[in-house]
Length: 367
Ligand SMILES: *Cc1c(COP(=O)(O)O)cnc(C)c1O
Image (tube, rainbow, N blue to C red; front, side, top):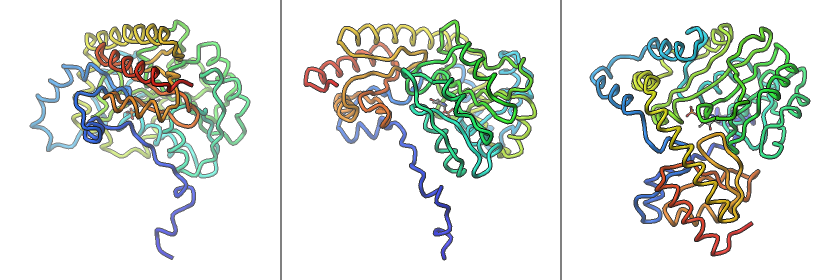
């Protein structure tokens, strides 16, 4: 029997992640130019200029291995967050931290709990481990933490929660979160994926870093890919009790975060101006989009993130028709057959999307 035939069934069954289309691929396919990429929740303002400058300044150092401990980035972030530096762990994107959590804390056959209609990376990492995965449906487009608490079993080791959720943009609030934690034992790691936390404005958005609950184990994961505009460099971070970080470090590759990513991220942390501009642009863009969508008679899900889930009509059709008009959005899978997810762009990009959508609606794509 060949080695390939020896690959376990749980690996063969994995359905690969399909990323948002790159701009140049779409432009080649459709013979268009200047299209708006609103498919992957990147920062439409681009990276922090300070991050770009920091990178330029240090290009001559690329022959050196990176600092495996991310010393400068760690200290810059820890100071801003008010947490001890040793509670931080860094990843090649926060996606690597998802993988690390799975590889560190799960054995094949252990159980993990996730929600339907959420970030697909959790399921992919769990499937690659041969984990038993329980999926709880969303309720009104949001996490149903009450139902998730009921789905915990004595074999559950990991729970993944996205707050704000991708693709719906919804959040769970402090009372639900506190209630959920009450019902999770110390033998479970709760992963709070906060890739979009900077955008959340709801006063009841919970603080997952509050570590007063000694017997509850929370790993908060965040990223430089979204509001910091560094998706191409791949760097994310996690905050957890030091013992959890220490165990994940047992598995972590020594140079998992590249040098350029560390330089740029450390500079981006200090760029309060870029952060503020990005958040302002998002707030204004969301207000503009929701107002215009409502005027068009199109339903949307209230968002605490930098994207919005829009009930625009048959997802495949709307996606294709928008592509033709130079607007790349994201169909988000079988749970949402009548929705597309749209990243909040610049005012021009937002208008381009709305113009495209109103043309399509006139053509009769409605639900
Ligand atoms: C975009 C996103 C991430 C970020 O992934 P990176 O690997 O850090 O680029 C993580 N979680 C969710 C829910 C996301 O939407």
